[in-house]
Image (cartoon, rainbow, N blue to C red):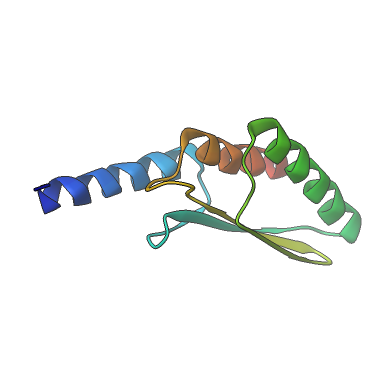
Length: 102
């Protein structure tokens, strides 16, 4: 039988790895996922971000679980496809963060 402490330690380790790879994102436990709201000054900027998000998703082979947007914001949720977020899922979150930092 697996030690519950080891399981919790593994979950905490996965959470810390995800958050350090993708600063600015919020962690959710069930299911393991990252959430972030991106805000923009105009619809054109929002649209450009959505286009780049699609490019990054395709390039990494990772699709966000949920994308919700309005004129000047985009909410993105990236959920784990397994028991924890994968390296590719964390990388997508990091790449999206870099898009708004550029």
